[in-house]
Image (cartoon, rainbow, N blue to C red; front, side):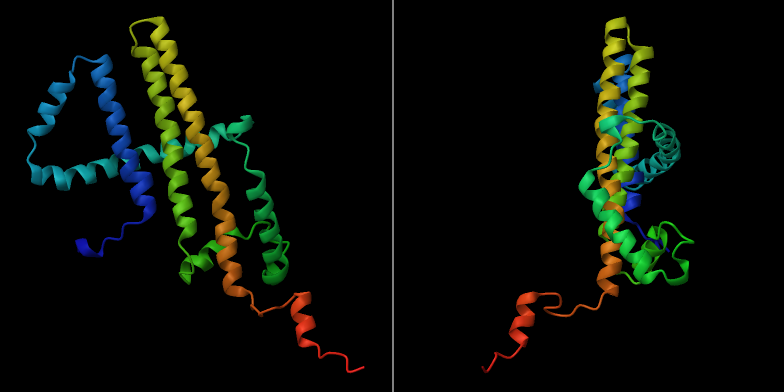
Length: 230
């Protein structure tokens, strides 16, 4: 039964690594603002049997990440409504390529659905996944999810620092650092998100287009034409 469990890149990045990072941040908060010292924390961890740690820790991190992910998703959806400038602005070259590929697919391959479905991304993604044409987009998707979760964790840790810090100066500094780091993570998540659709469209078109060697080349046409005998 265990060997039948399939683990995807999304599970690793968006759940496991998110839970691992959140656990480290939570432990740092306890050490920084609680009564727990770093030595006491390591001593407590060392009391667990190695067999239990090797099996239970990955599962616990994954479950923790699964709890964090929906909150991160809702938070990201909320702040995406606002114009955050550099943080939320997609890269021009990625958006231009996506528009070109999307229009090509709409007019060449959507048939009667063209005009009824504005964005063919979901259909193309399902096609690419079903035929197992490429996994590149999944790399981008998993990293997008991870950095999106990192942004949420950074904001949450900044807010916790603001309320638990002993002085006003350290509280403000902790909040600003959390927001600054979150902005960097949010921007990075946006970069990977903007790469995902072009990767899906490229994989779809590679499978659909009939590649003719030398087609569209003036030089190749000249080579095919016989020389003028006169």
